[in-house]
Length: 458
Ligand SMILES: Cc1cc2nc3c(=O)[nH]c(=O)nc-3n(C[C@H](O)[C@H](O)[C@H](O)COP(=O)(O)OP(=O)(O)OC[C@H]3O[C@@H](n4cnc5c(N)ncnc54)[C@H](O)[C@@H]3O)c2cc1C
Image (cartoon, rainbow, N blue to C red; front, side, top):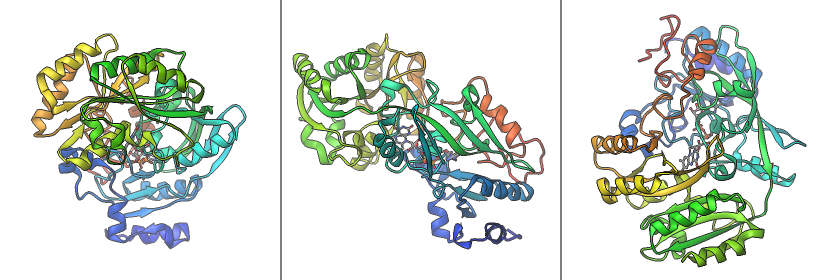
């Protein structure tokens, strides 16, 4: 770089400690968990920003973006960097805008809506909400580290989704403010349906600086693990609990053997050869649920109080995409897919995949509610990776038999499976980032208005 942009931004902020230039620190803040995917590992290893800036307010972000727009500097927003698709990895250098210092919970409104800055960690928000009788509607298994802004920018759902749907359903994100990347950056409020223009856009169309997030009334939960002789029996029981509205639950997960053998610290809950279910159930219903599991042939291998995120063991630490991490720790050949089975045909679809791929695919189900209120057997199956061609064969096969796949092995918004068919994220990008400087290369259907961005967008 001929111009010392880092120095100029230090002057702009009046605080050199918030501009990070040390190579190792910059490299670390340019990475996320993309290495979950052997395909992305090849594409993204070694990609890094030129330097990192840590703003403290939306006003400051506006000043930074004004400078970057004038200088044609790419900007990649970062929350906690726990995404697993290289969402926060800058492809074209420039600035990483790290929002960890913008972590204020402004207030929790009496109607159960939290008003927050984007850098707040989800775990901190959950704990604060519980103190006043509320809890998160849904959260990723990375709750302890992940930021709210990053969840909106790149996440989808998780624990709680079986009852409350995913993040983008049921008006959970009531409103947000976003700073635009224009000659004169604006702070624009989106509410109602307009939040979808920004959600899951991977920070390609603005920086979310303020969020109004709807919460759920807090419930006293209990966690239990139940072992079944076969995966079929485990699937039947977990589906029954997931779909029946009389059960108040926050998590319904089913693993086929040997997945639970990867869970080192809680291996004792996983009898050899058995399928395992984890359920987070309202305390008041726990005894009844456990009796019902026994009637269905299950054996309760663990039952314990849930007292917030410090509870040990915390069963949710083994669910959603944490399951993949435990598998990779055991054998690094494991990777994963993200699937939605058809509730009417799930058993047949599971059988077809088993017949074609044997134990190359291991079934890990996460039941969730979709936006229409229907319970879907979602899944994050483990895949024993051999080649990219074989992985793609599995993805193609899933799609041929009607299993939805949100492909976690691609590094663009459109390919990842949560891009909206009505193109609202792209339309917002044209409006808010006409030069294509926000996380360039990640929204591949976008073409910059002028060719003078200095950024080679593929
Ligand atoms: C072990 C493991 C388990 C996981 N489990 C789940 C799960 O259960 N459910 C789930 O949905 N995800 C899951 N994830 C993915 C990830 O942890 C979550 O999506 C998390 O919410 C991301 O938050 P973050 O702060 O780390 O975001 P980052 O990784 O920092 O950012 C994610 C994306 O959002 C953009 N972004 C960040 N902040 C902003 C902002 N303020 N404005 C605009 N764009 C922004 C970034 O540019 C990036 O594109 C998992 C990941 C791992 C490694």
